[in-house]
Length: 71
Image 1 (cartoon, one colour):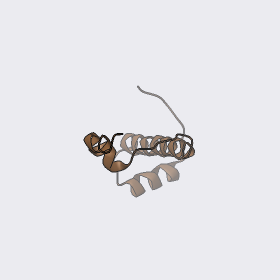
Image 2: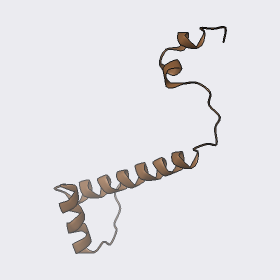
Image 3: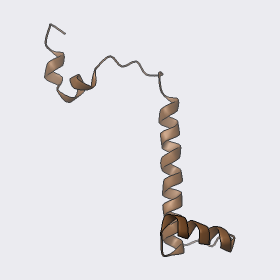
């Protein structure tokens, strides 16, 4: 999708330099992608403790372990 936005030249140059991207579009896509990933991580972190989970990582990897001992 094409869109027109107004961004300060210096800000865009800094973004391109920091992200090592050669094009403006690529730098902006990378920044937006990074921002969205960070927001998703924040939402997941907010859920910490909200869900009760009683399986260990080992039981998740090897479900047959959970059946040992009459579970």
